[in-house]
Amino acid sequence: MKKLLIAFLCFAFFQVAAQTSLPIIPAPVKAQTKPGNFTINEKTLIVVHGNTEKKTVDFFNNYLQKYYGFSLKTAAKASKNFISFTTRTFVKAPDKPERYTMEISPVSVQISGDADQGTFYGMQTLIQLLPVEKSAALKIPAATIEDYPRFAYRGAMLDVGRHFFDVSFVKEYIDLLALHKINTFHWHLTEDQGWRIEIKKYPRLTEIGGCRNGTIIGHHPGTGNDGKKYCGYYTQDQIKDVIAYAADRFITIIPEIELPGHSSAAIAAYPQLSCFPDESTKPAKGVVWYGDTTGKQVQQSWGVYEDVYCPSEYTFKFLEDVLDEVIALFPSKYVHIGGDECPKENWKRSAFCQNLIKKKGLKDEHGLQSYFIGRIEKYLNSKGKAIIGWDEILEGGLAPNATVMSWRGEKGGIEAAQQKHNVIMTPGTYAYIDHSQKKNEDSLTIGGYLPLQTAYNYNPIPKELKPDEYHYVLGAQANLWTEYVTNPAKVEYMAFPRLSALCEAFWTPVEKKSWENFKQRVTQQFKRYDRWGITYYPGLNEPVK
Image (cartoon, helix red, strand yellow):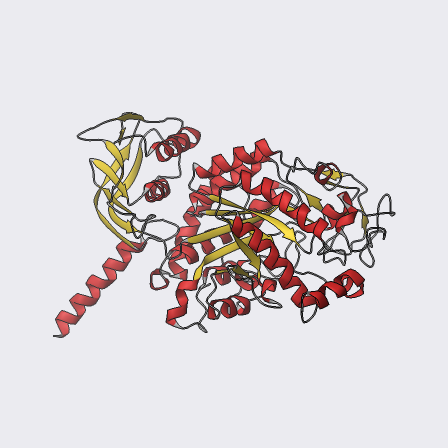
């Protein structure tokens, strides 16, 4: 019996060792190495069975060409030295459309997806098995893999309102998300400091709202102002181009149009959106302002500001017009409407708002916010869209079909799930990759502290939820706010390797995760970052928060 137990333990150990020896991030559900290797060279063929795998083949060949200097020809069949991409067909839609299997032997690599995106993710796993060093012969280990994600929603948000990033970099960032099996890009397009999306019916949104006259220097409220006009926005043609680019990588883009707060840029363009259109914009206390101080202005510093959308018929017509143009561009099921950090002071002192509260039988300004969100939701629902909002949309009562994005810890997500609403978890403690990565960060950040291991340890299912409430948690998201992120290299530095850690939290079953093993795999990933030419933080051993 003792020998049997020892034999069993040895077998179990070697099974785990085999599964975790492959340098794949996120770690797959099942993986087993086998004897031998498969070698990819210029004579290797890609076997395809139709046009359905074209996106996968193109991505793989472009990757080979970019990083190894060659690409592969396609063929309808082959008997050896081939890579096969196959998408299974089903009578009805598969339960796990992102599932794939992979069989690597000395003669072939055969990847099969339950849907096109599953085949694509199998290809991404194959990329991670390629040697990092450039070579004309790329040797990968023989293995059997079965894999699928834990969560259907795996997101990453980039704020382009505080600092603008051009189309070229946005596409590069989308490629990095695809390489980590992230399937949703949350594009934060409007802010107090800049409106970044062309709206043809309201050209002043980008002409006026797309620029600020200066930006504070240093940490808010700053030590001065750079006095430089800062502008940037995406044309609708550019937006369409980025959406198509992401779709080729099986990434859905969710636009965010902030309301009713964080709306200073829109109000600067159209002052009648404010409850007090004749009042000049108030800079934050201690901020050095540059340029004109009269009238409505785009904010030059960070934080929360009193001027918010007035819940008037003019405002609702404006927002409906804006959203009409937005939903015509974005095929996503969701539109993110913000809803966070909405100050109530202007509503409290507005006779119009106070009369509206009485007229609608609302309890207070929180009820007015709920009315505002509910009205926008009803409009978007009528257009076939659903809303996502930050957890403040719980205040005053949740809109009927809203999905809550929980950022102020997990409390909002727990409350929403218990109310039978869908939830996306993105608590600052674990998922805010704009926070410092080490105790003594050598570059300016917003603050906070999120070391790699803390991000890796995140479990998006809160312990407070009951098992029959788990399904309301659609998934989780990493957020990158850009108050102090001014250029592409800083975006990369803040994102990696924490996005590699979080993608595993979003994909891999809890029981398959191991911090010690992840450290080994991410060390190999660092070499891949170098191959990609991205900036990253190389530390692994910062103390856990």
